[in-house]
Length: 239
Image (cartoon, rainbow, N blue to C red; front, side, top):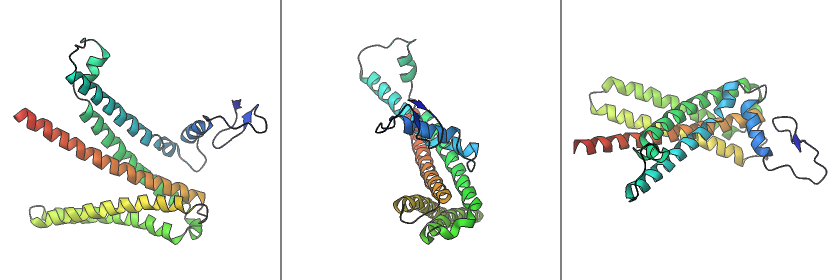
């Protein structure tokens, strides 16, 4: 049947009783959410929903290109220079893909945390309906992340001493603890439904917060892998 309505509408023209909704209806709901949304969601927040998908596509493309390059290196057959396969495998695309993924994930994660904070602030009038454990983990997320920045800033005063490394490790621990708190917020929110009765705006904010923390972790891991690859390439050139 023909799809009518957007964002959660499950009415399909021509569908009679007992006829299930087409399988691609859920895909259209996601597309409507990203493109149309509701009055409480800004356009930039709707575009943010596509950031995790972009990271998946980037890493998948890099993995496929790496497989093709590996098979080409062990293959005895020659590849013509003007072909698409030669362009994709003439050099490793992994460093470029990992760098792009790290930047995309980290920026999207930071923006998502700001969007979540905005949603929490706009709906602060219903915070009494939110379970205390959700509010606690939400506060810990932002508090620990801010504390990590404060500790890192203090460590810059002793950059030339061993205290700098101690402050650096402490800041990293606070930062990771904050990201873990954000992910646990989403987990507790999802696990507590529907018994906890969490308001929809706060559930959406918790989803943004947990997803953003996951994206930041992905960005940090990709940046670490990118740095390791660059060090290996520099070492092989020096040899």
